[in-house]
Every structure is written in C-alpha cells, then in structure tokens.
Image (cartoon, rainbow, N blue to C red):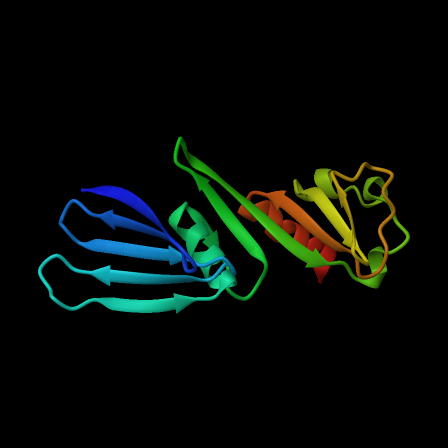
Amino acid sequence: MGLSHQVLPGIGTKYELETESGDIISIIFMPNGSAQMYTQPARSPNSCAIDLSPMETRRMGNVLTGAIMEAEEEGVEIAFSALADLRIVVHTYILNAQLSGKTIADLNIRSRTGVTILAVSRKGENTVNPGPDFLIKKSDAVVVIGESDQIHAFEKEFME
C-alpha cells in the first residue's frame, strides 16, 4: 500500500496508488494538462483506462479533494475535512443590465443575501476583492462566495 511517482520522459508524470485492498490506480499527467487514468482491481487481470481533458482532470481533482462541481454552472462547493459542518459555495455569474451603474454598496449585496463578491472580471481585466465603491457594469462577470442558502438568496434577489 502506498503512493509512488515516476517521471516518464517525453510523456508526463505517473502517479500510482495501491489501495489497502490491493487495487491499483495509476494517473499519468501530461504536459498539456490532460491525464490518463488506469485502474486494475486486485483480483482481476483486466485493467481499465480513460483519457481526461484538462478541464475534466481539474474537475475530477476537485471532486477527489472534497469540492463538489456543478456540471451545468461554474460553481464549486467546498467541504473542509477539519470542519465537517462547514460547506462554502464559490460561484460565477454574468450580471445583467439592471445592476449596471450601481456600486456594490448601493446594491447592499452582503447584508441582503450574505454573499460576498470576491472578484469581478470586465473585458479581460480582473479586480480581486472589489471595494464597496466598485461600480458594476452590464456583463460584468463576478465570483461570489457564501453558504448554499446565501447563494440561492443572491440568485433570487439579483439574477432573476
């Protein structure tokens, strides 16, 4: 039982885990961000292989570390192993025209919903931790953080 790794020149890096029951899981990370995953059950001569794109590799990595991906939306729910009762959701949204021309303070987002705006992306320019005087414009992409019920309140209040 254990984890090993090996650099495969010209291919990538191979990580191999043998589970307590003797199953073997091998993952080869390619330089382009994609991965190949192989599994071989302990009592079987057969193995199974799949190819993962860079996006699929990141999503699978998030799932394995406790972050639950929502397939249809850009959101992730994070559960911390040391704080079993804490689940935080990070989600992205494209803001609509009715919010344009107002500041974060004008919208009073945090006190109305509990959600905090972590970042705003506008035409390739990113602002991390925008202040209360940050002016929202149509089609801004925002990254918000909160508990699941706070995210739903944000959606109901500002996205419908």
